[in-house]
Image (cartoon, rainbow, N blue to C red; front, side):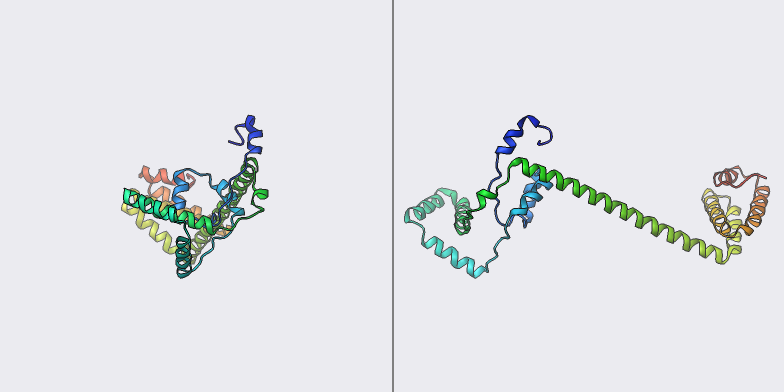
Length: 240
């Protein structure tokens, strides 16, 4: 709204935030669900929380004693009104209303609160900066995760090629067996292994001639298998 409704700039500057309650930065699950339901902007909520004091957490015994003292000090007419409300069927509301009154009475007045209240414009500007920073951090986190994924993939690939390099003869034998099965999945596996062998021989240029000789022989021996030949073309095995 701040970015779109520029004509209301003066109103945003004049309008002050309500007093920030304690514990705004420690929302319960139910309160979080309410913010989701009301579609409260998460960045606006984050900057609103900055001036919220921590919620006091008295022990249950201390809270019970304070509540008893508060109820005992209530004027008789207030107690009578609560009882009448219960008799009329409003008991489900009487308790929460009394607790809200009790908590409000226990919240100390802050003389500086009005002086530190932020305008709607200040809140929305701060939310924009918070959102921009959050998006940048998320972008950096995605990039770091992608780099880590690539490094892991490269390390896994290098380890796989090291295994092939340890016994390339066994891989050539497996390729012959796979081609002999005359199945699409076997052809796919055979061409994958051929590509791996080429990556291994690329580490030692002197072995490339042997690789070319073997792949040329494979083409000659299986030129009657068009499905296999197409796969050879896809991985760049040259025609004789």
